[in-house]
Length: 113
Image (cartoon, rainbow, N blue to C red; front, side):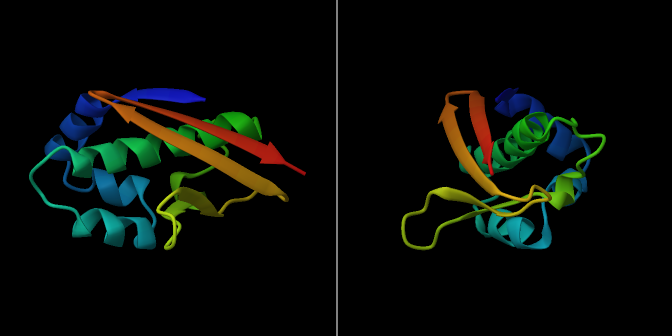
């Protein structure tokens, strides 16, 4: 589980234009770039993916030092819109939940064999 402040992620992106590319895979970055440059949703998305990858690394038991941000990819299911982990190093199923409220994003990842 992880909790992140959306404003902190927004500040990181605004101070370093490469921040999103460091966090997101190529497919995630393409989805991010489709979002309006103004407005809250763009930063919700980026904060959600960052937090989800932190949650994944905690569930994996290694922290972000052993699992690189690009080792995990979270895309939206085309039919339901729910987030799904489409790429990860764990040999099993990875389940994810991402929730946003005002300036916070909370994520939870469960790894199952």
